[in-house]
Amino acid sequence: MGRRRNDPAEDEWIRAVYPYHEAKETARLFEGVFGRPIKPTTLTARASDLGVHRDTGAVSWAAHPEWCEWLAAYIPGHSEQEIIAAFKERWDVELRVPQVANFKTRFGIKSGTVGGRFFKGQESYNKGRPQSEWMTPEAIERTKATRFKKHGIPHNTRPMGYERVNVDGYIEVKVRERPDAEHRSCFDLKQRLVYERAHNVKLTSDDIIVFLDGDKLNCDPSNLARLSHAEHAKMTTYKLTYSDRETFETALKIMRLNDRVRSITGRERVCPVCGKTFKPTNPNNPSRCCSPKCAGEFKRGKPRSRKEPNGTTR
Image: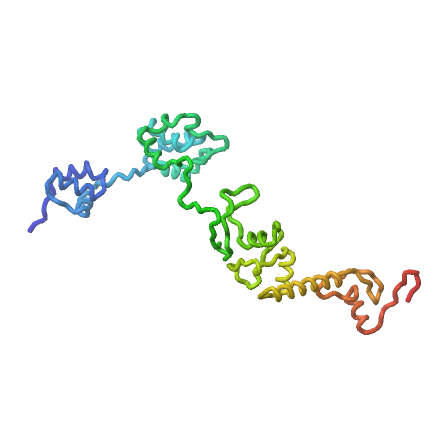
């Protein structure tokens, strides 16, 4: 059986229709016109044999040097939308934004404008204009369904007193409807609210409320204690732990004792070897002498002669 010859009428139809439609759409139109089905792959092969290709809108700059010269002269100082409109008016060809951007990159030409960004002082195109001037009545009606209603509240609004657990594991309580200049959130930590109510005090930003048993969800007043940021940092530095009120009080006393010892050992002193007044540089391990040399002589039991306050030498 010989190969079927193509109908010249079909070939002319393919030349006229194929460049402007997808292969599947062209196959559907072909069946409607000629009354027989055809596969999109078969249609593509026939179009290729006829030298017909889909019109992708690609522009060959090398084939149109006059376009390149005109664009090179017009692009500086104009936006991409202005370039597209002027090019269509001059050459009756409508470019796309990526084609203009490709041309500028390829030939190293810059518009010198801000592109699609808003520039400082730019006014909106609809400023001072009623909605009816820049929207159709149908579009205005569609916007009514999604407008904010008077006295309406969001679906996820929580009531006052609502509690939640944050990412750090602490309980937060909603105490205000809106954040304000003093408070960045509508929620406050529950342990601070409980402590203020139980002790009738107002906590400051320097105060920290700790849980004596280590459970962040146990906000019983007997399980809460107040520390300053400095005291909390020192207890962490000294690695003091606690599990109840008694051990907390003990750890607090140890911290304050260590802090007092550090302050005393860090005072100025007189070197027993040379008589120089100095202040230890390391309060954790204070030295009795002002320098390693004096410390060596002090250990050997051979103090150097030093001048007394009255001028005599000892």
